[in-house]
Length: 214
Image (cartoon, rainbow, N blue to C red; front, side, top):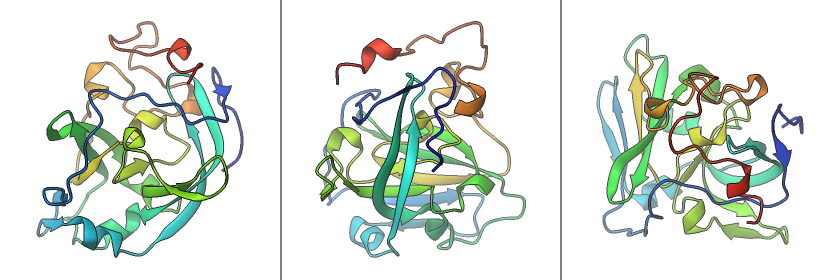
């Protein structure tokens, strides 16, 4: 949390809502969270089990590829590292993909990330936040309830999967949903790593006009 505005970004006090597809309608009876991939044994958790994992509170900066940045937002959730503790990883696991609902597909959305950058308090699967009145509140469905991944501020926020459903552990980096559509694999906002090809905006790119009035 450095309150440093990356190049090309504009600060906002709001938390704009932008996402692909429809907002997921939470159903506790069918919801689950899976840990799979390069692990000794897959693990599947129901929501009560997830909510009983250790709680982490963290204050973070968020930077969206659509040019907004929001500083000092406090979240409550489960640290990424506490999910990692539930599985035994194979040797040489270096990357992950975090999956989430896209319309009715629980694995329709994904984002790739390097494992080594996700082991601190600033990589968090969140369910509550301090709202504008500074009171604790559940995050809204359109923000990703019941579980939304918030990545470190060294990644653009499309790496923060909404309606999160799974972590896949990988030995090699693989593109996620937006990466397959021309977005940067690394997505560092301070280097303006928005697109794989800096000279071409991918189809489906949203600019500042999409969020300024929210």
